[in-house]
Image 1 (cartoon, chains in turn cyan, purple):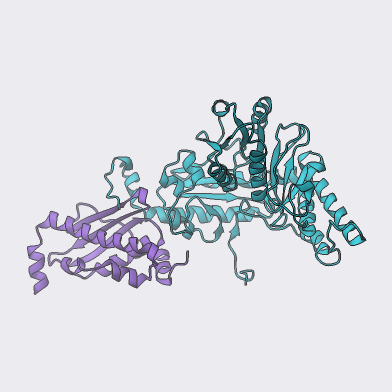
Image 2 (cartoon, rainbow over the protein chains, first blue to last red):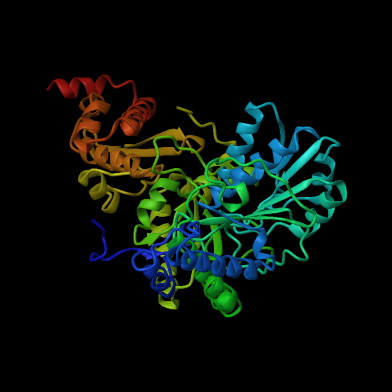
Length: 407
Length: 137
């Protein structure tokens, strides 16, 4: 059962997932029913038609990021792409060295893959971001070693939306012959990606963050200079042996159409969303003790991540239940664990806990933003009226000097 | 997290939010918890000359269960003598609000807040012999 008929909260969680654009859904449906062939079937038109659809979609994905369609490998999503890229490259090039470099603010799909490689005997350096969330290139250069084989840095951060300097990172890694992987799951349709210019060797994509269906993604694998990977999924030898498994034609058609629309509409859509995000920020930034997490300039327009001091995270989320947003506080789990991304920026536990991530998208309206501003101002005010910490702050007491009875 | 209806009611309509002036006669304050742990409760009681808590107020930084626990105890202590209030147990709070196991610490904190306020009262207004006598009447 869904909550379709009840009044649902305003959806401001587009970085968690996006709805499938109705134009995309329409294109997908015939490939579930009439055109159900297996694209690997070579002996009849059912297979030929499906194969043609898959190749058209591959060309659309390639066009959005300016690469050769032959460089695109279908996967089940960005998590699988990250696994294939990082494990595949580490396993293939392990004779050259066993050291990898990444950042503490990467997605878990990268961090947990790195942990697995550590268990296999690889060594990983996890770099701290600067307080604004960005990678310092000098610190990055200093972390590289003669035995470094793979670097993985995301293009757009999922929590704070900051854009990492991957163009400059690529120059450094290419000069040293290090494989450079970029998780671009949060970037497609939000920033221009030109793989002819960027010295990126492997790039992960997801459909469902860009108005396509869940369960489909892709990995870009550079051909010139050629990057080699060890397959992680074995079977019928699909995708040139890099990823076996029958191709889900309808999903692939959906991803192709979603990426085609992203290419055509990105410029105008980004400006509209930037206007809404700026309106949201303007509506709350004059409140006291509000902190924007992450750099505002090197950031996608879709993201605003804000901490409200002296308000506890779980009660904050409870207080804004008319909004579908994400919190830096793990309020749905038993453990009260603040966001590891905000902690890596140097935010203290209280600020990390009391953060809200607003992510805007294609179907966000100006009215949604106006209502959101009203709700935030009202509820934060109410919770602060109830907060002894706010009261002490207003009395001019420095909370760091208070002897707390820890429990 | 699914909250009980009672927790949601106290969260949405908290009872007795606020503060008494520190120098008001009969006022005592208990503050427990720590921001790093995610909960701070401030409970204030106003005790009349007969040793009866005639009013109580709270402010809480914490989750919905912490807010509900402190809101509930302000209702419970009102009308009780100081000694009667000191017998309130966290298990009663947890039961009344149907707190899940991961939220039991909120009820413990609320009990601690009552104890801290009463300790402050006894420190300010004597060792409580008068209050005991009155409770026995």
